[in-house]
Length: 426
Image 1: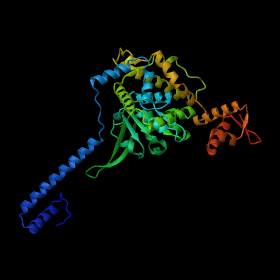
Image 2 (image 1 turned 60 degrees about the vertical axis):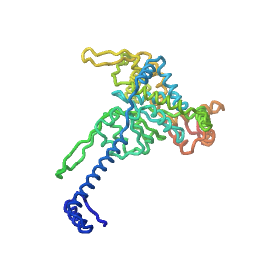
Image 3 (image 1 turned 90 degrees about the vertical axis):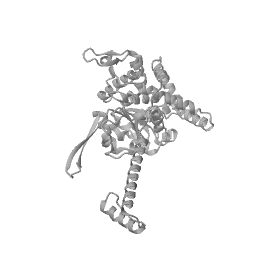
Image 4 (image 1 turned 120 degrees about the vertical axis):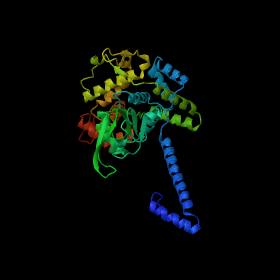
């Protein structure tokens, strides 16, 4: 006998019980009891399935053993911590990009502070922007990051109130996440977002409710279109991927060794796991920079207010990472615990960030600046002051449309000018 039935509809169940009793000639009480047992079993099955699904979605937080904690703390107290960290990042499988990888690692570490930093990786298609971001992100514990490929415009508002607090948000491609860039910018600036929606309760009454998600968060993304995401880039460090021939050689040699089976994947895994353990030993603590009032940026810096804030925040991030080497102090009035920035922290930050700040204060885009520098090298080598677009396009292997965009910027900024003979003069 086949029959569609709603087991929570009493009238349907009673009719079905009588039909069963009549068809197979048994008492209605037996049929009713059997259906009750079936309903209870189905309910339990649904509960078990939901519980299993929730357990699958939960990220297990690793508890460090005493030996792992001891090893991580010993590393954090060691001399030349930033240099040793950079070496470990290389051992984990990040090839080249010595400055960018350490910068990105420290930016990701700042997620644990009250003023996290953000970064955008920029470069041509296929140069390894996403690879660099994903490899450095592997050094961050899974419970501290959220990876996004595609997300709807309202999705961010439906996270739990504190679910994103002090998390690293990784966007594989900014071009595929345009709908969430606005709430992300609000989280970066205001450290919280709120959306008002209309909701009906069980009685059907319409009510207005507020959905609030709190930060702070650290955001990282990749794109080839620097100018398109100006609002986001203003809030972020811009990391330009190394597209030099030397870097190409390093990557291709690594690919050859990997194909030949001469790369020790176990060593890469161990280095990455150890750096994740190091991250877990960093605890939220306030950082005070007693030298901040004496630090000044050059007057030529573009958008000095925001650049100055980023500069000071990065110094604090370096101090935060070196927290196990700094004596803890306490505010006399509030009793709040804090650590202080040292001159060594400022020196280390300056060495790492100088090129990023120069790029950020540049009036032309980073890609255009790279083109201009390569153009200058070519002209100097060949003792030329004029060139044709075709000549440079062939030499530097640049697409015609891309070169046209570069020339437009350079002409507007008076770096080059057109000549009557359709040549351009530097």
